[in-house]
Image (cartoon, rainbow, N blue to C red; front, side):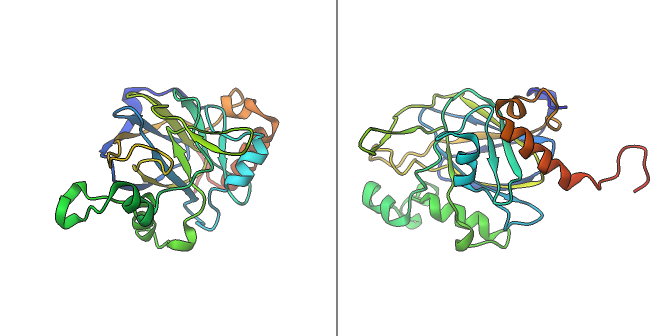
Length: 251
C-alpha cells in the first residue's frame, strides 16, 4: 500500500543545479520527489517503460483519458500501451504544463544570446532539447524518442482566442511534487527554463531529487479514486507484474 513521504524512507538524494540533465530507472513502488530550490523552477520530464522503451509517455492519451489539460495530484502519466508510468501522489504546485515542449538551441541563442562552454564553463547556455538528448543517449535512445514532455512546476493557460499564456513565478521555492513509479520507469529530466518564459536572462533553477519507497497503489489510492479510468489503468499495469514470485514462494 502506498505511503506518504518520510525522510527515513529516502534511499537516494541529489541536488540538480539549473541547466543540468539527469536520468534514472525508478523501480515500481518507489517515488521521485522533486523540490524547487528557488521561484520559477521548470523541469522537463520524459518517462519510458524501463523494460520496453517503445512504451513511453503519451501526452494525448494521458490528457484524453483523464479529461484534463494540466497535470496535478491525482493524475497519472500514461504510456502508449495504456500503462500507468508515473502517478502524481502529492503536489504543492497545482498545475504542471503538458503542451509547450522544450527550448531548442536556436530559441535559447535568440532569447539569451550566445553562451558557449569556452566562455562560461558550467554556466554555458543549454537548451532543454539538447539536455534531454544527452540523457536519452545514455540509455541507447535518441532523437526519435524525443516525444512530447511534461514541464513540471510551470503553468501555461490558453485564452479564448487560443493564445498560450505563461504564468511567471507560478512555482515557489520549496514547492514539491511526488511521482510514484507504477512500473519500472526510466525518468529523464532537464532543469531548463520554460520555452515560453519571457525572462531574457539565462538563469535556470535547480531542484532537489529524492527517491523514496512509497509502496504500490492500494484500493484507497488518490490516483485510483480520482477517475474510473485510472482504476482501470492501474489494474492494467499491475497485470505486468502478476508473474513475479510472492513472499514465501520459491522463485
